[in-house]
Amino acid sequence: MTASGSPARGSTRRVPPPPAPSIEFEAVSFAYPDGTRALADVSLRIEPGEMLAIVGQNGSGKSTLVRHLNGLLRPTGGRVLMDGTDIRPVHVAHLAARVGLAFQNPDRQLFAGHVSAEVEFGPRNLGIRGAELAERVALALAAVGLEGVAGANPYDLGYSRRKLLALASVLAMRTPVLILDEPTTGQDARGVARVQDVVARAAADGRTVIAISHDMRFVAECFRRVVVMRAGRVALDGLPSAVFAEAAWPELRAAYLEPPLPAVAGARLGLGATPTGSEFVAALAAGLRNR
Image (cartoon, rainbow, N blue to C red; front, side, top):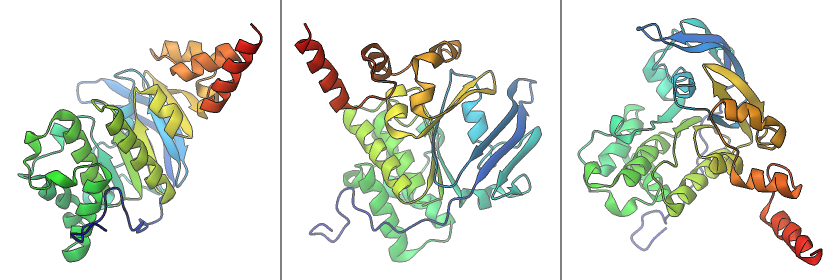
C-alpha cells in the first residue's frame, strides 16, 4: 500500500476469480448477414487456465471466433460449449461474468465521462459495490499504470493509454476467461511490458487467457499454445516451438505471417524456434571462438 492508503502500483491481493471453464468449439461455422462466411467448421478445445494466442491475417476469423465466447455472436452452425454446456441460450449478461473481452479498438468500448467510472462499469453491473468496487478499480488502474489519471476524461488520453484503460475495465471484472484483441497495438516498450505482466498475473491466478495478436514476438514470449487461422479455419495448432519452427514457415507464410525474429535467428544458429537469451549468447560466443 502507498502512504495514501491506495494499492501500490502493480500490487494485487490476488483474489482468485471463479474457476475457469473448459471451452469447446464443435464444428462452429459463422456467416454474416451479407453472406460472408467467417468461420468454417472450427473445432477447438481450450482447457481451463490455458494461455492461447490466435494469429492470422485480417479477415481470417480470429475476432469472429472469440466473440462467440461472450455471446456477441452466435454460431450459424455447430456449438460452443463451456464446461460441456451449450452457451447458445445463455444471455450475454451472464456470459459477461465469465468472459471479459478487451476490444481491438478501445473507442468501441469506452463511453464514460471519466476513467474511474469506465473501470467501475463492468464490476458494478455484476453487483459489486462499496470497498470491493473501489479496490477493484484501484488495482486495475495500477496494473496498467493509469492510477494517476482516474479523474481524467478517457478521450483526453492518447490511443495507447485508451487501450490500457479498456484493458483495466476488463481486469476489474475479474472474469475467469480473459480475451485480449491486439493488446500490444500502439504500445511502446513500457506498455508492452505492462500487457505482458497482466497476462502473467492472470495465468498465475488460474485464468484462461486468449489473445489475438499480430505481434509474433509477444505471442512467442507469453503464450504456451498458438492457433494459426486462415480463411476461417484452423491451419496450425501447437506449442510456439512447433508453430514457429522452420518446418512450419510455409504454412505461416500461406497465412501471411512471418515467424518472430528470434525464431528465425534460432533456426540459423541451430537453437530451435524459441531460444533463450543465454542460448543466443552461448551460440555467439562459440561462433567467435571458432572464427
